[in-house]
Each structure stands twice: as C-alpha cells, then as structure tokens.
Image 1 (spheres, rainbow, N blue to C red):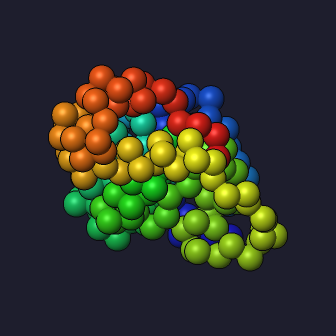
Image 2: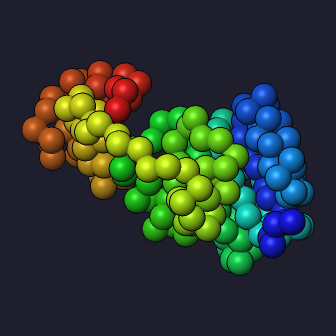
Amino acid sequence: MPENKRILVVDDDQRFRERLCRALERRGYTTVAAADFTAGLRVFADLRPEMAVLDLRMPGKSGLELLVAGLEVSPESRVVVLTGYGSIATAIEAVKAGATSYLTKPADADEILNAFTGDGEKKPAQDFPPPSLARLEWEHINRVMADCDNNVSKAARRLGLHRRTLQRKLQKFPPPQ
C-alpha cells in the first residue's frame, strides 16, 4: 500500500484524466479528478492532497498558475507537471515555481509515480537521441519569450528576427525531439 495515498489529477482531457486515475487506483492510490484551474484549486484547498499531477496547458488558467496557487494553500503537496508541449523554458519555470518534477506526455502511471520520488530505477535506462536543430531552436525561442514576458517585439529584437517572422515561428507546433 502506498505511503501517501491521495493524488489529485488535473487535466482538461477527460479520457486521459479518467485513464490515469484508474491506473493510479489499481496501484493503491485514492484519486481525485479535476478538469480545470478552478476545480483543481478547490481540491487543493479542501483536501490538501499529498500529491498532484497537473496538465500544463488547459483552457483558462494554466497548470503553472494552478501550481503556484495550489502550493500557496497546500505547501506540503508534491506536484508533477505533465505536458504534451514540453520545453526547457517551461520545465525550468515549473521547477522554480515548486514542482517536484516535469514530464512530457505520453507518460504512464509508473513514470509519474517515479517522478514523485525521483526513483528512476524501476524503468531501464534508455538511450535518447539528441534533439534536432529545429527542436533546439523552438526551445530557445520559447525561453527568450518567457524571459521577455511573452512580449513578441522585445523577443524579436533579442533574437535578431523580424517580429512577423517570430510570430510565424510561434504559431507552429513544437518539432519532434
């Protein structure tokens, strides 16, 4: 039986949220599901969960905003931020805000549970290829945007790009790693 039993799962994708909750429950945890910032913050305040898994991108306020607000009302909670749009900039931002770990989707229940403890021994080490140049460029652009408080004109000057060129690059999805 797990030592810390209650896990909050906040994700706007209902199918993923339900599937993850079932997988965690099969491992002996009690789960509480929420679909957005407001419901997630309510659970943080009412139940003070030992652990929480937060999706980064949700309609309305983001998972990073929920991370900050949730830790204000429940500072003892350990939080893993989960996203399908991972970047170095958002990972750094999440960890600075208090996240225990940051994972990119797809992540299974065991990977998420390992992220809470930092125990990566349950899964064999994998040899990941280095990221592509397009991926590095995308991450660098997003890091500069975060440093410039998402001001496109300021970031474009810093990057030495025309503002419209930067806007076109920002509209693209992240390239595969």
